[in-house]
Length: 131
Picture 1 (cartoon, one colour):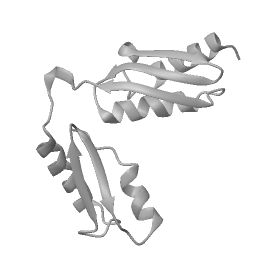
Picture 2: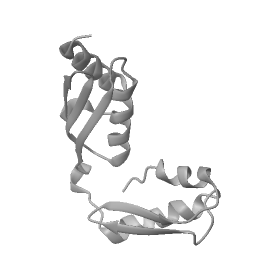
Picture 3: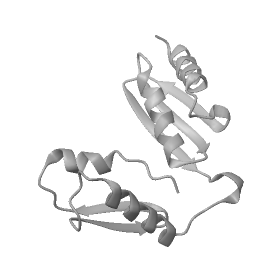
């Protein structure tokens, strides 16, 4: 597949993905490497766009450079994000209580700690926090 064909296939997949508004997402393709640029309205939309691009046949790697711009000027401070992350962890029965620490800096969440099982680590690293 040509680079132009790959780019168009990724754009088409973004249009078909209901959880992604591709209006502000740019796509380039070169040698199977797809770069997503622009902005989206949430972290969940960012992840959905990346997954959609990854589903396209011929995509070998994704360079994801999407910026999150919360809709309607709604932004949350680090304290709000930390509280929401703590709530998500508290509701997840697969993660042992008081084993995972949360750090939020400039909107980025870092989880640290020790858990007994691999699935416990995976249950939070793949979660999406919508702030």
